[in-house]
Image (tube, rainbow, N blue to C red; front, side, top):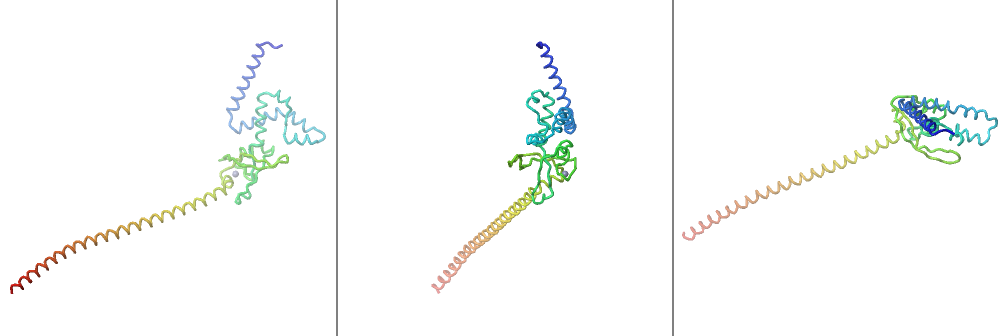
Amino acid sequence: MASFGSIRAAIFDKEEKKQQYQAHILGLNAYDRHKKFLKDYASFYEDERQKQEKLPIKTDQDTLREGYRFIRSEEDDMDTSWEQRLVKRYYDKLFKEYCIADMSHYKTGKIGLRWRTEKEVTSGKGQFVCGNKHCNEQEGLASYEVNFAYFEAGENKQALVKLVACDSCAKKLLYRKLKEKEREERIREKEEEKIREKEEHRKKREREETDEDTAKANDRAKGKVRSSTSTCDDKDDYEDNFDAYMQGMFL
Ligand SMILES: [Zn+2]
């Protein structure tokens, strides 16, 4: 029976190994980490792969097993070390994380998507190389989340997956959306222009009305002066007439 000390030492060793591995992989860039994981994966699971390749008769079970490549039994998984589980998780995830796009009909908004083949997963196509199947650009890549509808095991499924695209392919990917946005922008600008024109027209009318009112007020003011003058005139007339009248009286 193992002593407490030896168990503790074993746990300590394991933990130290794990930390060393973690430190090592964290020090790598994404592409080098990818290469390291795939290399480790191959070394950990090579036996399994060979075992599968040697199966003499292909049954439904084998076909299923092929679908879930290098699948391990529960017993095996119980035994796998931390590093093995990590690279396996990484490897399995890769198949359903990134996809490859056929962008030949991008102008109609139709982008065909498919999962990557094993060869593409290993080479990093669609992850470190543009995911458009006809493009090999490795610079200026960005990852886009796309809705992928696919058929698997007799069922229609849907998943949000990543599509890595270079600048020019991203424009193809977003072509319809960009065009739609441009169209909406044009409509919005036109509407704004209409509102601006209406507002200017309203202001112009207001100005004209104000000018008219001012002119009327001026006219009225002038009229008032004239009428007060005429009153004076009237008074003068009256006085003149009165004088004449009085003069007449005494003639
Ligand atoms: Zn591209």
